Length: 494
Image (cartoon, rainbow, N blue to C red; front, side):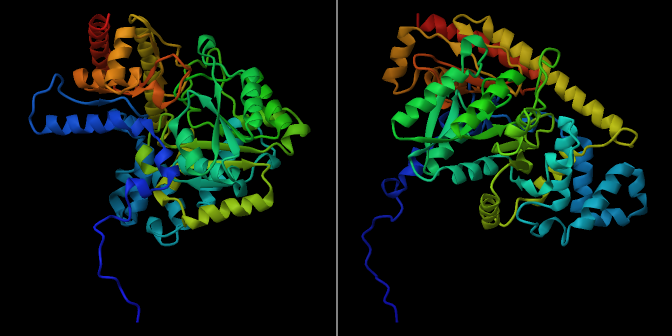
């Protein structure tokens, strides 16, 4: 019989000092110190305490529905019928739901053995993966059957788990590196060390609209190799987060050529592909399409991981957690290992999978829901376009602030010039200067943004990221509060 010790040292087994260094080194700024403080302030407001503001405005993360964006009606209609299929037996249902929503719900239910409460295939439902493959062909205007296959598509709980799966495959040890843009989305800077790799920083050129320059990529790769780090992957976020730039086709071709020459896998984060606000001058292209059009030299063996999500675009279904990864020209044995990783988590959540299907296969012209779908999506897109312009122009007019136009995505990333006195005050408070500014903004206005140091930035510069997701009337108030605060802050630290 096994003896159980009755002695206790009084010490916990799990303490911060006994945690994995990989966990301790991971940082995720968009849910960091500022948000924790904002949540505490919000609780004080709800308790009836009087503060300098009446509400917290969370501009720290791309979470559209939290800030008032309404869900797409067709998506919610279909999901509600799937979740409560007894509604389909009611004779009055045809007077409540559009015919195409009823038809789609029945179609999905015919593939769901056990409904949404049962596990699906570990790679995701085949019907949805086929819809994704069809969408990719339509989106890119390439009907060739060899262009894509549902068997190369893996659904996931948002794009983030797919990105992390790619990082796990690429990073064998700290001597393996992934090239990430600076500024970057903290998912990458947090996950790469968490899974045992090393981040390799390449800097976007802010003065040229956050452009990605091949010479800078070459510098980053050369310096990494000199340090004994093998570059295994290159992350490109297009449109950019937090920077909002959209790549042109020639730039994308040069990136593909660079990766091919250097034997680097390209990870294309394309979750903001519907959020492009300069369509008159720039057309968004997928790396998949550009690769295909470059001919057999690239289309047959160039390794590409492409990501998309239901959280962004005009859908904003962040909490439903749905996304996908398409694996292009990946070795079959590696595909088996990717499937193994997916199997460990059993399957993505079924509702998120179904909304991926609805995203890539929305109502078609001539169906009952089409007009409403177009009206809703166009209203959201046009409003986002107006808000992007308003935020960037307003911030650019503030003293010591410059803000590149947001060509896409959901954010502005202004650069702020802070006085030596402000930097000194931040140092005394034990903060980076931009974090100090953002905390002061929060404490005085209730507006929660993210300091640029959370995304990494060029040495000696300070930034912050803000979404432009508050509804237009609220956004106007937010910007007025920002203007008042900024002027007081600048005057205080002259």
